[in-house]
Image (tube, rainbow, N blue to C red; front, side):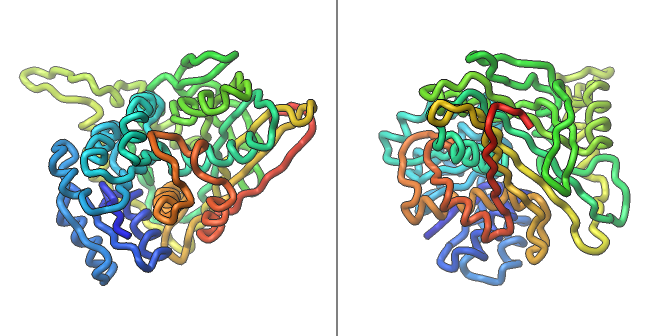
Amino acid sequence: MRYVVLGGAGAMGRITIRDLFETDPDAEIIIADFNLKNAETLAASFRSRRVKAVFADIKNRQSLVKAFQGSFVVINSTPYVFNVEVMRAALKARVHYVDLGGLFHVTRKQLQLHNQFKKAGLLALLGIGAAPGITNIMADHAASQLDRVQEIHIRLGGKDLTRYDRDVPISVSYSLDTILDEFSMPPAVFHKGRFGFVEPMSGREEHLFPSPVGIQKPMHTIHSEVATLPLSYKDKGVKEVSFKIAFDEEFTERVRFLRDLGLASQKPVQNGQINFVPRKILLKLISELPKGKPVGPIRQYEVIRSIVLGKEKGKKVCWLVDCHTKGMPQWGIGLDIDTGAPPSIAAQMIARGEIDAFGALPPEKVVPPQPFFKELARRGMTVKTKKVAGWSFL
């Protein structure tokens, strides 16, 4: 089976490629990237004919179609702003499509391509990383056991006790560009049966996660779960959906400071005869900073939590579904395994016929929870469930 990983030379794409290579011995993997040199270097590191690199220009549809043709599914690991264009190229190349999420607004645009994908007999699986992705499927696991669903709340928290060889001003494992959006764009919420928006980084409050994460302070950020879960469980009566994530306290305040200075802005600023975009300058400067390297073992832990409140046989119940992640030390990968591995898992499930729907759909509509959880466990991620009486919000 041939898989194309678009943006495969990037941080998340590399993890997806490693997962495909390690878990599917028959996979033919195409690393499609604008930076062909980096893609070729990555492909060569596997020392296998199963992994090849090709050039792809995300701003040129024909270039994408050429890269996609002959494959079974394309895994889009590029920035979310390109999702719709990549979907259109997948349609033209007649291949299935998987991505990491559209940060609410782009996800809504992607859903509008549902009929085109369905008519073509193709699946576009929207948002299958950690969050969205694992979060949606865990929510579905709980919701499917309820007669009525009242509320769904997503909470993420983690700890990094790894020692690094240097301190860096801003350290991120995935796209800083996306993080700046999460910190500056009004987060969507579904409240009293209606969509609305709140202030960025608002709603910080203590939340007790399982050990060793403990008490964290998740905050509202814009995310795709809120775009799809209210629609998926409309018939079960859902009235409240929210998403909150807890970042490291120091990191949170540093990004807040940069945002408040206006450095997250994408509006051009004129300085004399020169126009510049603050965010582009910031991203460039940070990209050139030296990266901290682990000294000793990676000591990270994350809990991804889906809280579902509803009724079962007329009684109020609360489901807590948690995914515990501590990385894949044997692959040299930390917590990002929970974002990079799910696209590979989903693509392989599509290839095996375990996911057989057509259209542009979110994970909670098409991914069977138990087989998916089993695949997570193979990669060191454990899903634990707890059902308690009442509508307590823990």
